[in-house]
Length: 117
Image (cartoon, rainbow, N blue to C red):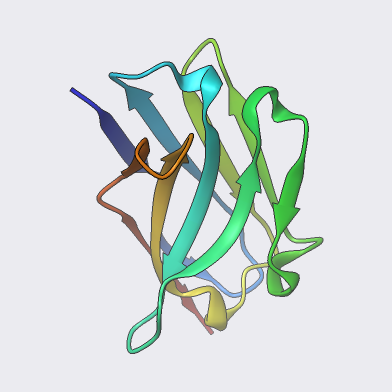
């Protein structure tokens, strides 16, 4: 049974930091590209960051470059999103995604991040 369980969200002041974690189980984690998406109220889900299998490549949406860092631990089957210098516009539900191909595409339930001014 595939599971992606996000944690680490919460309420933080602007300029602060949070570290999101996504613990995976039920599939061969190291084979999958891992991504973080977010969805703000009234907006479409947005790809925030992706790390390929074995961490060969990382990509970020422009709005978080230099502030967010995605990483993975293939021993712990966990992907992380370190978020620094948070802004109010980072407020959203953050979702973890595992993707190998169009068939093998899994989602977590999301964790809420609220950035206050």
